[in-house]
Amino acid sequence: MHTAIVSDCFCYSCVHIMPRRLLKRICPSSGSLESHWFLRLFGTRIADPRLWGLCRRAVTGAFGVGLAVCFIPLPVHFVVACLLAVTLRLNIPVIIGTVLLINPVTIVPVYYLAYRVGAALLDLPPTGFSFEMSWDWLQNDLGPMWKPFLIGCLVCGVVGGVLGYMGLELAWRWRVATKYRARTRHVPSSVY
Image: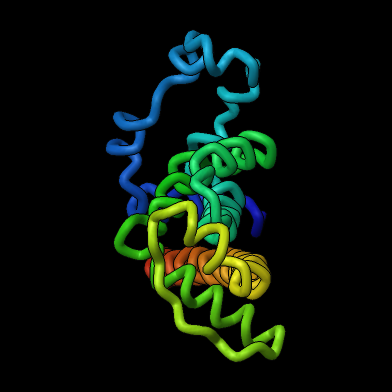
């Protein structure tokens, strides 16, 4: 009986927290997804409700994986995020929204942080950084920085993903428990 009450509370609290009507308008229907030629290679898997719904595990997992994908130092974030979302059955809108945290404004500080973390882990002194969009810069100036940069991206991606997942998971559970306590406090004792 306790699990039924908790699941009812979960559904009740999500209706009041999450903008379900807005998400239903934005998210495509399963029939429209299966009709696109480029999505046919995923078969019926693309219509899985966990990819588009607000299931706690799919949302928190998508947030954590999206934060980890943000630290990939190549411009393949959306492709990798979507493939991981379909493979791991994570919420696609959440993982895409999380990947959008890396944009032209935030990319330099995020990757600089990753470089500094990598340099600290390898016990290397950080060098001066000047970026130039040229082949010469890629061949000559990137050489001493690539190892700390890639190690920093890997470490920051793993740590950021785990902390993001755990943080959102704890916040979600706290919110559901708070709503449940508030709801049971106002229910007359004769109901039980």
